[in-house]
Figure 1 (cartoon, rainbow, N blue to C red):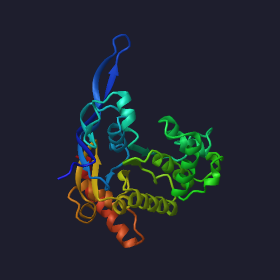
Figure 2: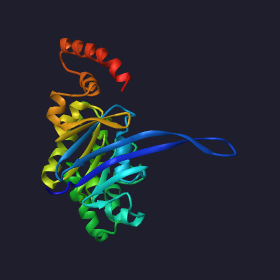
Figure 3: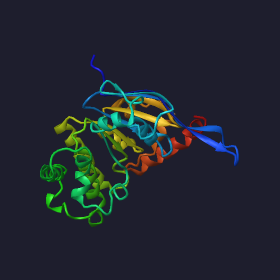
Length: 285
């Protein structure tokens, strides 16, 4: 069997709680991520699902080494990332990029669209100034954006358009893996569908691998080959997307599914009753 593109084993991220004025000491730890393991084969998508505060984004940042793990292994394309130095990580990050949750906060308001999308190329000294301008135009066109808008600023665009700019920036260095940190949660439902379809088309055309983070199982189901459900820093259920959605094994997963809205009053009443039934089990999880 071939090695998966990304392999995370027993990942832990514990933040210290400190007290004291003169003698600052650690009295406890917040276990944001506590023993998470998963694999993503090349060209596939793992959906990481859970409520806010469950540890999804911290897992993503620790995978990218933006937050250094307390314990565990992160292997990307056969290389152990947790032991790499800063300059070595900088080279690896050409192959791993991220699309952030908030399209309004993730783009520098003082930079034009052309500078934002071309910044990774300039940072990694890819090509000449002329070739970078051509690459930026191609990237914007690839995400369905008008290349003539390169001299405009982020405030001139809607949330969906800004997210397309963020995706174009993530694609600039031709990465193998893209971490999508709740990329549609800040968008209207109709725009969400457009962005999800764009991500799927890009995966098909470019052979991308995704770590897709969301709190909505309905969104993740259509995007993912495998789903991992997180609760309190741990993965409580993991399996093929359809199996997790149709035959959940964990009460927490069932509660997440019961919270997904459906256009049927009778089914919504039944789901509300299901959530109430599961509440005692969740409080003990």
